[in-house]
Length: 541
Image (cartoon, rainbow, N blue to C red):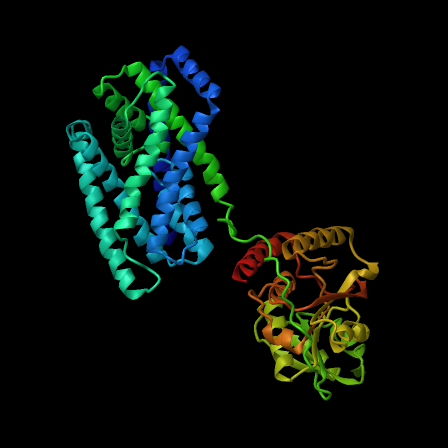
């Protein structure tokens, strides 16, 4: 049933998009043949000869959205101005690409995802302020030319206005209830609501400037009338950017004011084109600036904060654990290679069995190792998470882990723990590429290099072996470590600890590819699980 609902929802969305695009195409078929090409080129030449006028028009248009961002800030005081402006510009740009004004939700999405603004507060404030915008259009039109404005609006306009009033009342009531529950939400006052009217006046500057390029010298009241009529018509726009609707309404206003219809069409098209160019460019920029982008963080934040060394109790052991899954052929040999002590500290070893279906557990116990059972197979990330917790519970000086498949050398344990015991690091990775690799399959070597380079960019840190299975953590690092998914730990553990300020170091180790068992890593499955986890990790810091 859920599947069928999802299919129906997708089909409905596609239908809406197709209808909108067809409406835009139909508008183009109607509008374009009526444009005087020579007059349009002459208007373009006029604009090119007066770049200051183009810049001034765009600045005035952009200023309108600055006023709207300020109004939004007055309702959500904790929303930074840059993010308020970006959210508004995102919806503006999307509305010039998508039909039925479907770009509006991006305004809410932007601040919710990028600034952790509550979705209820963001939605209620957006509905209220957008309704105020539309009501300000009507108020301005009624003030400058009441009979002309209401004559042009017609019955359809009155119906749309009624819907806007209903939306305004609903938004106001909703926002009021949110403001009563949340101290970070403020009901819009006279200044915030007045800024909507000021924004439309600023937009009329562009309309007035563009009209001069085709020889139409609008007065201020006339420019405001054309602006308000064209915008009022776009409230129910079907085509992307309201193409066709904007032009038809603007031309009707020009003609009512006594101007030539052909010149009016060119003025309307030129103004709409200028607005569209601005909207698309600034809308794209707003998706990435200010940080974080709409897509979220793609790299760790730059930070100079580092956690200093903490004293290590003299009696604390080095705890080594080995995650194992169906490693009956290798586990005993790995256990036999573990030293009894390193740097004068006893080594406590245990195996974390991740639901093996062979004799791994029996052979580990026969070799004298303690075994922690996960029961059913949960994944390497889950096994490491459990092992780290056991190490913390035992008050370890250092918690170390390496795979139980024989690829990593337990006898080199002293090299892995030395930087932590010396107070030089909190998190140490045994790098195969700094040490000796006896054998590694070419495609595995290539994949390791590629994934490590990606991790290096994301982490903003020099890393030579991002997938190594031999790692050591100080007690504090082990206690703070979070592995956010069960499949694997490699990238998310590193990003988690670096983001928290733990000191990172690599040491060379020797490596030989497994001769028994089977690796769980398959490239497609690995990427499907790891890439989303890395994204979540970066955006959780």
